[in-house]
Length: 87
Image (cartoon, rainbow, N blue to C red; front, side):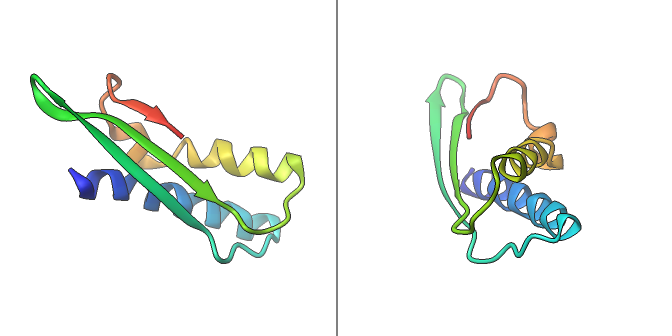
């Protein structure tokens, strides 16, 4: 279950980095804090919380573009719709 949560953050950062490169943005020193919450019945991931830190100066427009791209990563789109994503 830890791997699933980390895979989501990794995928989001990867697609954000690809888009940043297309926009000519230097995408460095980016990291994510990831936390998962488990439910008990049935035992499964009920929530994934991710905070992605972008220690680079971005315009509001570029930040919004990268956030939207992150939300479209393949892992994000593959997870169960009942899973709460706090990103």
